[in-house]
Amino acid sequence: MQLKPDTEAALNDWLGTSTWDSKHRLDMERFYKFVDQYRRDHGFGIDEQDLRDRIKAAVKAKGHRVGRQQEDMIQDLVSLAYRILAFLKATGR
Image (cartoon, rainbow, N blue to C red; front, side, top):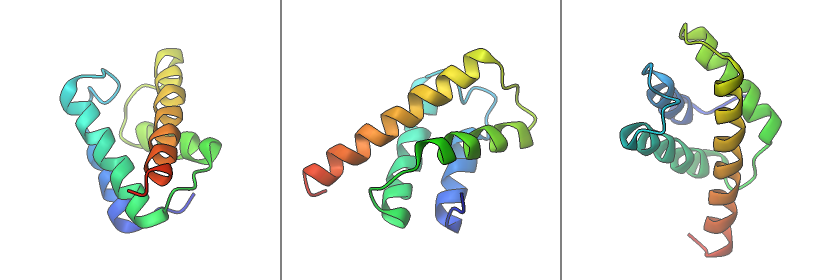
């Protein structure tokens, strides 16, 4: 998956902290900003498997652990991103 520079920056901001997978309020805000930037740069379509793979690669590149808990978190958050994009498309936002 090739992300545009602003989307890549938002992804790196979200995954840049060791707490990216904690669901802490600040981490979730960074995730939502990533989804918003993704929408602005890439529209409403999303290839969930590609995005999961891209997130895993980015997490590993940052030296963070990717165990079962992180894989489950990635699965959940990519599904959430898909639903957010579907909502935004359906409501014309």
